[in-house]
Image (tube, rainbow, N blue to C red; front, side, top):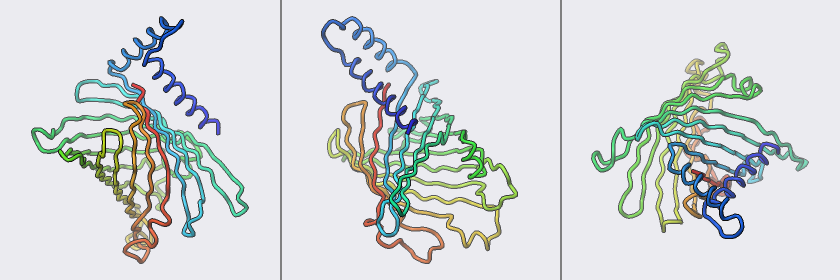
Length: 290
């Protein structure tokens, strides 16, 4: 898709810039030195730029691949003070779906824009035992069709993030999110008004390059319908994802992951059956340009 090619081009340019920054010899040494100086100045500046690309396989109950989802996110940040930071996020999503005839149907969407403010250092591990930061986000849906289907213009989301590093290479972290949905038509009682979302992660660094992480995600949305209506809707979900990561260099990270929902509300079971055989697989790459 066009958007995916654009994102890939950006990734390529980022890596080329990194190569220049590393320096080289030859007839272009002056130009390379100038580029390296510019890159070094960007690294030392309050600005930051990074890209995340994620490619995930989704399966049905028969363990058949039903879609491939591609996610590309560009982050541009600015460090206002030692503890205050603002960031702009632009997100593109591509979903490639197979029908019974194995024909592919792809759709690419400029799916989200986010303006985020972060205040770090609310607590610190050396003084309080944990690191704690707070976040405030304005989330906008730029695609008209997505706004209509979601009955939403976006949302306002707050969150608290905590983390702690242990001496044995284990790191613990967690973030609690609360989002208020900017509903377009409040007469539609099937649209959620807000959600609560908790993410916890335990990671272990085997070396300075290889790591393993386990992430649990609990999500619950709240709809304005009656209690009887809510009791028949799948509004709660608990999922677990395992990821094996490799830090190629200080700039590029890659990970392979598998995850699935292990418990869904109102499905009549405590846990899902065949969680791991039907797991959704994927790979992701994170490039921190500067």
